Length: 234
Image 1 (tube, rainbow, N blue to C red):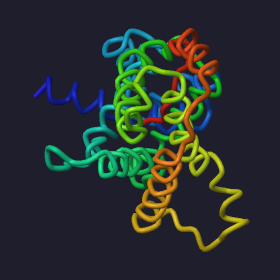
Image 2 (cartoon, rainbow, N blue to C red):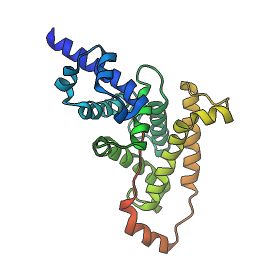
Image 3 (tube, helix red, strand yellow):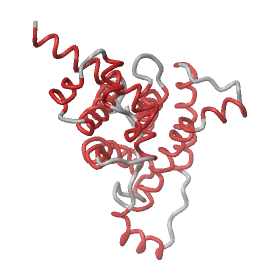
Image 4 (spheres, helix red, strand yellow):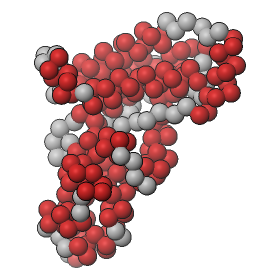
């Protein structure tokens, strides 16, 4: 019974911390405030997470892992799916994780805040979650570009960033979109429509990219490793 109670306390702390950190940020949020919301004592944070920074790091990991469990980047596609289907699944998963509603709606907001106001936890998040996600997307993009591209070259990286940028714009600019185009919806059907559009737009661009001049190819080879992708959460 004691173990079950401890697990329940840990879960309540993570849920309360998600709401409060996503609203206030790491610096402004306090352990006492989180514990009050979770109906737990301050000692519980030290027991389960060590300190405030440990709680925050665990929360970011939980945001990514719970989002990817619910909406995997393949969206359960059958093996052997083409790059167009895989790109759509990836984009759809990304949008659902950022724009989803319900009890864990704080996940996207938390990651957006972390990218805007990075903490020491960002290095862990990038290494554990964002790097594999970025590599997966670059592989899809390279396949869509065809023989002209490799997953690690600068053009592929730039194209992958363009795909991610479309998704992040939708998330970051919902308030503006709501005023400019109130017909755009952010429910499941609306997210599905956005995913289809971003995928179709991106595939058209990828399949019609002009060949790079030789000089640009040489330059790309020398600096391609320095270009990265910032992925959203859970």
